Image 1: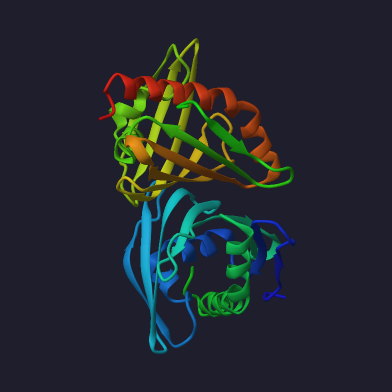
Image 2: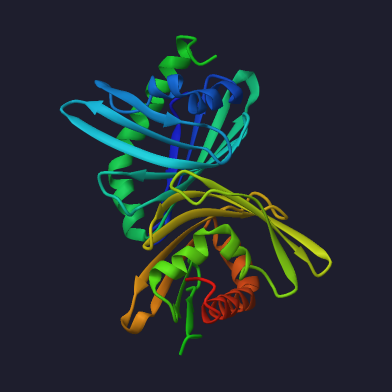
Length: 159
Length: 159
């Protein structure tokens, strides 16, 4: 099953953990997260477009983009604390529409048998309330993003 | 009392909160956190020296320094997610001697009456274990740092 995605968010904690498998090696899925042109092809709801303001995927770099379409505009920015090739991304994340609620996200990329891989994510929030607000909106969005990434992989676009 | 410092770290949580007052306005205490020459004058145990590798205190910038002396060397690095003049710093933090345990820190600078100010800090850790490990070592270090910052302020060095 390529669409197996688990989310763990225990009551009263400030974290969200997820795991998702892909039909591509870790190096390709990592590239789809660090190449701004590839990231733009699977990020955001269908019918929107990602406009990169800047995107410098290296340890110490930073990023910012705007998702536009469907009558709206949603801007995000963050910093890359660590970018380790095909292995790990540690980044901050903030939605500019509701500033003052930054989060920290750790993504770990692991090769599986058969040319497949798994991404494990852990997001940390400043408060349980911040975590719960993100959780309320993320489930559908995360699934749609990852389905779009599956399609990009199937089309050979991420390799 | 200039040396009133509170630390809150409830059992089972992934955060450490602190508050500390200083005999200087928020703008001066903020500058002591964002000017690398000033930061180096109060960071680390007495008898050590801070060697900046780089320090770019702006939103999207990054920093790295080494504390040397007392027979040891301790390197740290992180990213500045947000640097808002005299108001707020949001940064990541990682000790290179024990990699893989990044944290996120929010520092808020608030002016008080009489030219004094308060710094409120909130640090987020990837796990309760990470938080507890930091807590075990930080109390004494934080007090010594802030006492050194008091001395820098009293000497007129932070203004």
